[in-house]
Image (cartoon, rainbow, N blue to C red; front, side, top):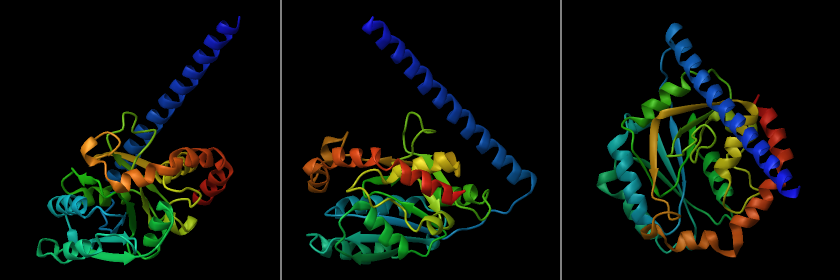
Length: 277
């Protein structure tokens, strides 16, 4: 009897999960189709936005070189990109970062370095956002590269479909179900101004992207594009990428503590999603 109930519960759970996937798949596809065609019908002009890349990093100067090279090689209009680096005061590679920022190879990049002692990943991103000038705010990691040529112009095209309202853009991060999660969601200035933050400071390190995605679902103020692709050299799946920074983020059971925090903060996500509507 207990086994039968367990099987029924499992079937119901799978049906609910399947319906959820189908709903968001159809919703996001139809929405993208609708907004794209409205833009074409109304002959909306493509605006060129100033884009702020938020980049907290620690002891990863070599990985920063890989990222900056990809930005250099893939940008459509690099002059309107600002890269905001946040370093810890006790980072052993401070001098290396400074040398990189001044290297002639990156002279066209607008790199701004901030040195602060902040406790969490969200605090770091929020600090950078408050010091940014961009119309578009793009939190990134130091272990990614941009694969799409002219990705910044693709951002222009997607956000040009949106009027002056808070919005989030989900890009291609290699997720199997890209309509359920995005590792690197991009927000516009209106989104940030409504909430006064990029990521919730409830968490020690994780869940910045998950929080933004959840607000996207609840407010329905998001758009998904396959036309912007990044690749992450994740230490979770690539042994050679494991370093002291990754190990530090995993210690003290931070992932589990952040998961518990996630479960206990639903009411705050509901409240903040309403601010975006």
